[in-house]
Image 1 (cartoon, rainbow, N blue to C red):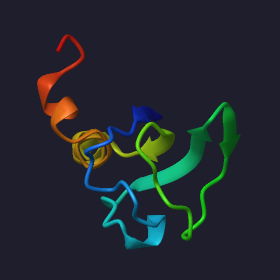
Image 2 (spheres, rainbow, N blue to C red):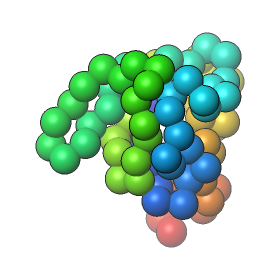
Image 3 (cartoon, helix red, strand yellow):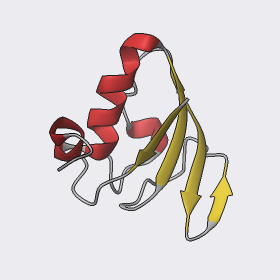
Image 4 (tube, rainbow, N blue to C red):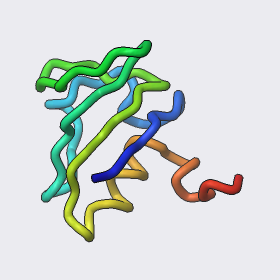
Length: 79
């Protein structure tokens, strides 16, 4: 499982899940927004600040993180 926080500048902000070119072996299973969680559909629009929980294969963790966290994913948690 991968727990992500969508940065406001991420490329996926404002896009529907079905419009996002997700890496193979990745599945979005939960979106957390404004204190509530829900299972996303293809029509779910991703917003900055959303929390995403995804099931990922070993090789898809970094590409998925880059999609949803943008430059923050490249800097690491200490930045």
